[in-house]
Length: 298
Length: 297
Image (cartoon, rainbow over the protein chains, first blue to last red):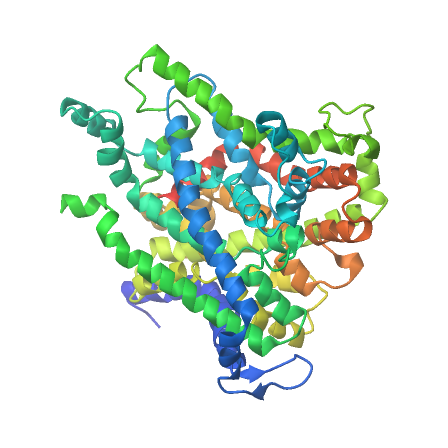
């Protein structure tokens, strides 16, 4: 059988992407639908799922811990993401200057992103140790204040985790640095002729041209903060008194500690919808502040 | 975007900054340098603290004010952390056993799919690619419950299969990244190979893969690091102590001894971080380029 060249190309295309299509159906689309189904059931893994209608979703409305988890996670997101963007942008701007040792500084700031998982959580538990930790020691040396209990304090556990997140801004910083390098020098020269220097230069050239990258990191950052699990589970286990009960930690506990797969699936779908809505919202808002070069040229 | 553009960008990251071109005033440059020195401290200090603690005696970790220099140097914290409290050496090996095949599978399968998206025209391609990208937005925890149920029904709990097999089916992030690299391979090269009689797979093997080498290396490192540092996956699928992976093993360390032996915990953490750190440094150029290519839309 002879196929036209175009037909053959189409067949090859689908053959080559087949692994992804199969994986998508098996490990993403399938589970997504399955979890929608489970979310309407009571299911403890051992026995068969029992239809529960809207039961799980109604339970969510009355579940104080769910609301707490939602509060903790959104607070963390709305502080960590913007703060992270500002800090990494400031760092990228500094690191884009022609000063001696700049490569050392770039590596130093990027380095923390290499550590992650449990080792990272352990390191910060030790740093935040109220008695013998480095942070309180330095605080006392510099400010004379003894410092809080950090991870063991309802008030201070979130600031501690946010601080910890800031240690990992190197990943975003490198992306911004790449974006800065991509801005044509001529633009700055032209702007200089127009008298745009210093802050004006930042706000009228650098930031608009960087806005697509900032937008990209805002979205990925947000999806990341909604998935915080390891640090919460290892360093605080949601405590003290649920002050750091992150959403995914609560979901994990519902599924794998209480074996309420149905309820956990409802939690999962709510998470999915929240992330979806926030992304859509971000895309809608982007029209007003994200500046795409191609658009301009058209 | 072409490969060349990426290379200049990567060179930009590694090399000297380009738009600081106008020699700033001396005072300005000194200010920036001093600022950078101050800013770098909080990024470096925790590492120093981690290393310093890992060589201290238990006694010295409990001293206040803390001392930076271990005295005496307690070298056997490292062998002790590997063998004494939990069999961390075994967890190391377990982690290698699953993350190496997982990485190879993920990179190869993603390269095949990326090749399809980069070099073949077909109806539906655009829509499918958007679908690939949008799956990046789905948080893993959303699908973890049904995945767990699936693997449990397959009898895969307490094996490394749930951590390895899904990697055979390409990862959206790697597809995106490798496609960027492959689009930079000039079509004339593909045509030339075709004229020489190479088939679709021959071209993939002999032209596309060699020319995407940096991308493949970056993809492999990122995937390896992600697998190495993964905690949630092994936590869900592995229950037997002997099969624990490094990250889960570290928490069982805490479960056994609590947090009263920071010198051992830090030695274990240094060991757990080291492999990824070494690989990052060894392949820094590829890494930077990988970040540049994926960071830009």
